[in-house]
Length: 331
Image 1 (cartoon, rainbow, N blue to C red):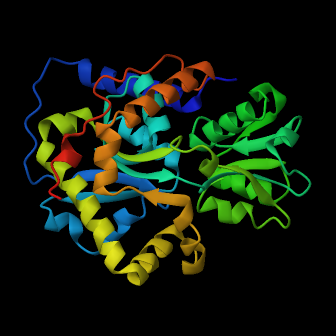
Image 2: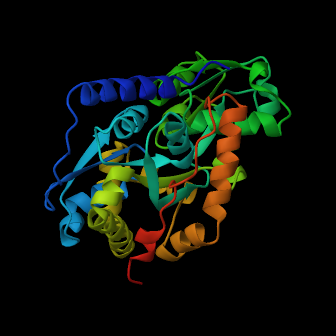
């Protein structure tokens, strides 16, 4: 398997950042003003669209934080932006967080947004009804991201190796379009791009994240600099998340309209994503951080990333998980 392009890009950007910052005389950065806005990134995933609701309903301000909400058309671009310090926080998977950390980024997980329970899918053209039938076929996905990981998990469970398929690396939107156009035999995509892929008549999902419980958790991840220097801001972001989930529960129709509009899909299509994403409550978060289940999952993912070549070195788990912010939310 080829070296993970995202890691190469992150490492190069980190080196450039260091060269620019370290070339001159040493300096001590001034403390950020308490009212300085933080930039929170997110991209197309049902478990992250609630941030759009938080912005439109003024829920960040209610918790005393100024947020510049930045939407990324490319999920990979959001990962690189956080890894290189161009944003302060991002919505991303545990898999991709570990990959960035292994590349030298200093990040910490402060919140579990959700677990993928079906909205990540391997979709195949008519005539292919199982993962085992992918042997010798061409499969597209965005290299190094979570649906590439899902593909590798599914291949392993079916007794296949990455060498048994021809892997075509494409950005997720392009991968879905290529599959719909009949250019590849199967594709690994997440919602809402699953909707595009399934527009190919007769296509169907042959593996989903529902079959791999806990394998794809999604998180609010912040730079360690933000967590250490402005913990009150991180606390405000985490509190806003739970306020937003509560608001959505009480205003389902309006919330769905907001999220479907941000996703660029119909409200009916968006409603179909609900079962494939399990939003984590405050109690779920405290259990995930407190029981050790999140740490165990991180260890399993870290091992898989290195064994499969998606990361060059095993990421350190020191400082990766910070439970104090979910613990700091009043019940």
